[in-house]
Image (cartoon, rainbow, N blue to C red; front, top):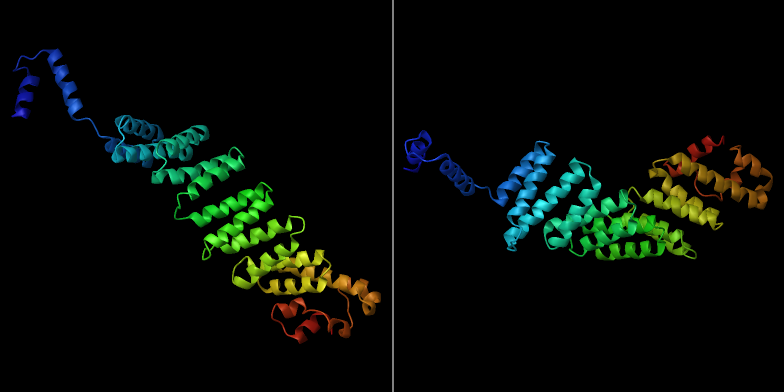
Length: 324
């Protein structure tokens, strides 16, 4: 009946004035207005179709629709719309200042929403890479970690790295230890061990702790890609302390799996040259040794394995390499 009646009015049979028709049209529009959820769907469709301005307009309409509401459903809409708008500014339009403002609006207005956790992470990324505000980035990651998100170990490691970048090496080691204690089974533990070793090495009087961290990484995670790097760093620390035999031992252990064996072999050669220069029986042959020339077999017997032996070669092959 309603369709027929409208048809009659529009065809002029009802004699309704133009003003009446306009009022009726407004009433129809009100009755057919879209919900906040409809605007969210339209915004997401526009984003998928690479129409960012349309998406922003739809997100704003969704926010307007729930402006004075505080129900859980309204808060969910507000969080989704703010997150979508912020992502549009950041990822589609590359408008970093506006993205920063909307992400901050999200975490302030809907702090308990799931979207706020990711907003803290994205704020940290913006503050770190666009504003070089490392402490601000740390604060945002700390806020995200307080919510115990699924990828907490990754975020905790990012905090460790930020403190290292700040050259706050003491706090870096504290955060690394905290990560290893809180997430003992995390794949980030080897990373934290390596970073803590580097941070300890940068602090006065902490070389023993640095060596301990590198050695722990090599012992506990021998299959980690960081293990040979840890052994190489361990060798460097020992060499700096004058322990050339200990340095060679660490480097020989690193050699089979190090991605750049030539660097390791060169370090071993330099350490052996230093040993030759400080060994009475090898004083006269130090220069020849440093040049890679023949060294008496009796001198090599007391040295650590050669690079060939370390890489799995036999003693005979090692001797052949030196011309024996």
